[in-house]
Each structure stands twice: as structure tokens, then as C-alpha cells.
Image 1 (tube, one colour):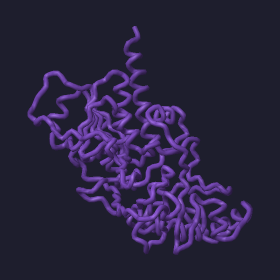
Image 2: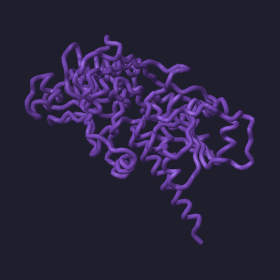
Image 3: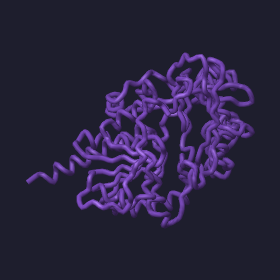
Image 4: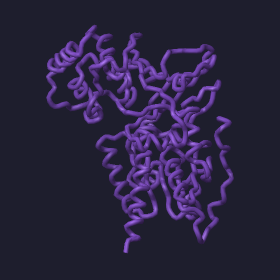
Length: 395
């Protein structure tokens, strides 16, 4: 564990300990981005918080493990990006961010392509040199396909960008990511695809982008500064006790688990990582390289030092393998198809009636969240609370 990271507190009172007066204003279940940001804002407003997490470390999926003096993104690549100046100012008030720009590369049968789809990509694919030539190539393939009402993801993608881009850069990667054929995936998963007719390899369009200088642990530690935090603490093992010591609960875990799977389990995709230390300074020349062939079992290779412009003599890489979530594994991505969304709505209807619980984050709200949107949600929550409080104080 990174020596800069707080030592987890593994000593917990027994569940049958009761308190007539709650010790804390908020019990925050989950020490990831949502939980840590909520704790930070609550502390700034003078609230007493206890943050617990079942993992041996705080930080959730942005936690970094230091290997060969490199901050290794233990749960996959995380790049902070936003166009919300308030959010950017908030995170930079905790830790300074560097100027990292996400420019992933795609590898298909040994050939490299720039992402997102842009003029560099089109030149590699077809040799086109002008936007007009590239647009004409895509339009011709779209017309040839003749798809007017896409019935699945494959048809949706081809109707947007044509057959070549779909087969080389989308099909294999997507099928690995979701564990299903593109013809079996709903069209709405790809509502649009980023296509740029400029020579711009920056994946995001946001104004602000970067990585915390010193790694994401610096951000989490800053957010949790002055807040009591207990790791190796499972809410569900000591639920009666934990709920008794706070006036309100902030829950960031799986909402179906919170309600004991009353309506059944929702589906998730998970990831496993094969991490290696290599005795070379630079393995692939880029932080992220996607492998888009279906036959290659991993979706991408992450070379962690490039997130922070590292010059260490060795390098660390992680191969990323998607799979279906099962009990005991980490849930990464909600499967937002019609069946699972309908199931989530049943849980949400119950959650909306709660007065002592706030549900927040990708697992509790069963949707994919970028980090900035998670923080924006927290900031908006406190604005709403303060507005309501001020309104109640009016004569």
C-alpha cells in the first residue's frame, strides 16, 4: 500500500452496541469519489461524518498502488475531465492536477489507429487527406448499408459510421466489453459515436482535463482529511450498529444489495487485471492502447507511468479483461438494458420514499458516472439542502 495512504482502522465496536444519541450526522458507506466528496463537503459545513469501506483502502476504484515509484491505477484507467468550472476548482482546491490529455490508440491486427475517430484515423484506414474525402467515404458506406431503423448495436453503429470503422474499431472491442454479440445488444447503447473531421487526438471535448499530481490517493486523502474513516468495515455485517450511530446514511454501494435483493439481482460487468512490472523504460509509448480484435482476450493495455509523464527506469502495465459479474467480484459497469433498468426502477421507487438515506454514485444509482458528474451531483445535493434549510428558516 502507498505509504502516503492512511493506515486502515480495522477495530470496530460490536453490532449490539447501542447509542441513545447518534455520534455522527452522516454514516457514509463507501470511500470512493462520491463518499469522499460528500464527506469533504459535510465536514466543511461542520457535520460529523464516519466513512466506512469494506475494502482495505479508501478511494474506491480510483485507488492507486505504488509499484516501482509509479502510481498504478489498480482498478483501471481513470482520467479526470470536466467542463464544469466549479467542479474543476473544487478538485484543484484539494490537489493540483497535471496537464495529461487522454489520447488512446487502437490496435487491430498489428495496425495502430488514433481514437476518437478523427482525420488521423481516416487517413490510416483509407488514405483520405481532407474532411470532404473522409465524409464522402463514411456517407457511401452508410448508404450502402441502407439501415433506416437500427434494430441492434451493430446496425446502429454501421448507420452512424459505416462498415469499416465498425468492423475494425468497434465490433470486437464492444463484444469483449459486454460479453455479447453486437447483434444481441440494444441499439441505444451507442446513441452516437464521436467523429471528428480534424486532426485532433484528444479523446474528450471538455475544457479541463488531467490527473492529480502524485496520483488519485492524494485527492482522496485530501477529501477525507479530518474525517474519521474505517476500512475493512462491511456495512452489511454490522448494519444495525452502523445505522444506530448516525442521523442519516449516505449509501454508495449496490442499491439492490441495500434492499437485500428484494426484487432480484441486477446485472453488472466486472474487470480483472493482469499487472506486470517490465524491465524497460517504455513499453508501448502511450498510457492506453485498445485491442479491438475479438480474438485478443483483453480489451486494452494500460501503461501507468504515462499518466504522470514518468521517467522511472522500469514500467508497469496492466491488461484489462472484462467478464460477467458474479458474487465476490467487483461490480464495475451496470448493464443498462430494458430488463435491468426496469428492475432498478423498482428499487428507486423504494429509495425515493426514504427520509434517512441518500443514495449516490454509479452503483447506488445504477448508471455509469464520469468522476466529474459524481462530484457535481454531490455539490448540487448540498446546494439543494442549504436552499431547503434557508427556505424553512424564513418567517
